[in-house]
Image 1: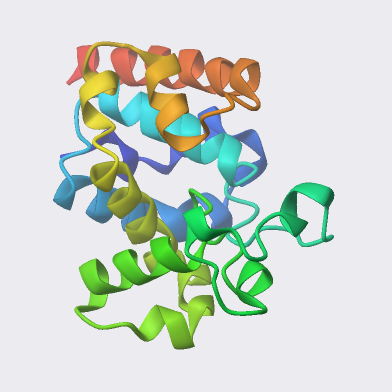
Image 2: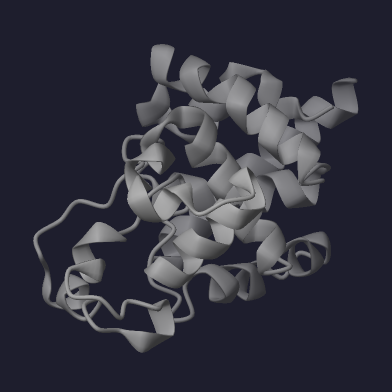
Length: 188
């Protein structure tokens, strides 16, 4: 069983997620991570670190919309599958890993629901359970356990954000999570 069940791990890795916020996500993260085999110190630390960065320590399961100059590039972005006018904003980053684009929503919807309900109701990914499930789906879809297992944290980040945006920030979370989870495992 994942150490994430312990909300204290979440709170220590992500200090802004204290109390009810950590409690709200703890069970969902534990269940989603377990079913996706994101277990063991290396995988869990890498996953928590990426979520901490992507979600602002669980504060945001929906991308803050400006639109920024970067977000404006979502509109009509064929690589994201945004082919219908309005797709850019409609399929903005959601979930704890900030799933973005019609293409990803479609694939995630098929995996989680066996239908395309996320295309009609993308807001479903703002629910804590589906925020966690979409993050683990993306992790498995991108085969991120492999670099996590060997401690290739840069490789992990590249599979989530090829530009390595916020890598120093992500690495700080990773080191903290790795230390806490290693310590917890040694006491079990």
